[in-house]
Length: 437
Ligand code: SF4
Image (cartoon, protein in one colour):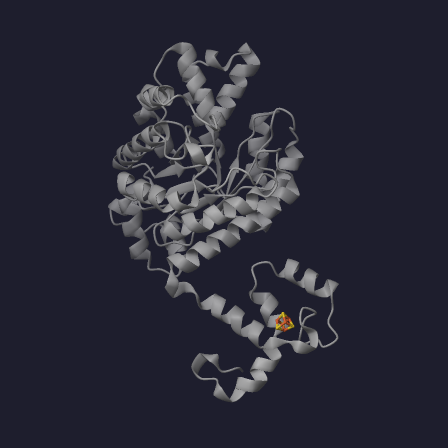
């Protein structure tokens, strides 16, 4: 089987490329060219029969990922199914199933069966969780088992995988030499891999045998997302030498993987102050040759726990504006607990809004919807207005809870509605597409 990138390079427009072109209102040949360059990826896995097609990358709408999954404390597969369904209902574009507790094969398969989003995961979680259960020491993981787990999960239908190939002896040495960190290590997969390398005094097998990882991903045409295992978990650690060492290696691996015919993405931080977001994205794009960038927010402050979906949304709007292609949501439970269904809903909504804000700045020519929203608001056409909003249910709920006497206005200004008065004054002056129906 040939991958999307291999077919694109043979000038073949696949049905998936055509679908992405339709969704985005772009030309299919243009999409093919970007896939051939590795600037757009399309997560597909022929072993998954019913899966939404989603394009991620340059020139496309910024996509939103929702992450779910059990933990060692809360392992309820039915809850994870419901969270996956909430993520889909709220229009997330992709889903990551990141379970580390309970029966991991069962949760993954149930989630794959019960939602239509492309599902990604982190195979290191299962490999190290199983080694922890078996030996009470993840360091005793047999590295061969890592590759077996990757293949098993791909065979189940996983369409993209975050794999921590870029952590190596060199990047760990940078961490030691810089005197560790203010915010420590925050990536579960990254920390597992660092502890395995320290325990075994070995190089990362996923780095040493990178061609083998790519071979497996190619076999299922799954996207390899180069994990950000040494991402900064505090703004004071942002762009430290350890993070940058991993980023350089990941960008180099993105090029190697692409040359092998594998669809590649690079993952990003983490915690980044607002003024460093643009630079972070510019570095990834430059060093990786334009590989799609998958960022976690980022969070531009460390002190907002409880409202970190908002903190991250501010970072996400900025990262989308400067070129991030896929944004992993952050929920209100971030840093505090495993997200529940309501956290998933709030996280997806906040991140979709952030991605929209970023896209309004990234693609000024695609602002037509905002104009329609403004006109319907100006003319107090409430029904039309609600149909155009991103979250009509929430907007209607608030309006209905405080019904105005005059149905044309709302209870904010009531008799003194500026919209109504302004229209009265200027109705004769409207021109062009500012004219009311
Ligand atoms: S009452 Fe005030 S807030 Fe409400 S629609 Fe009119 S101008 Fe807007």
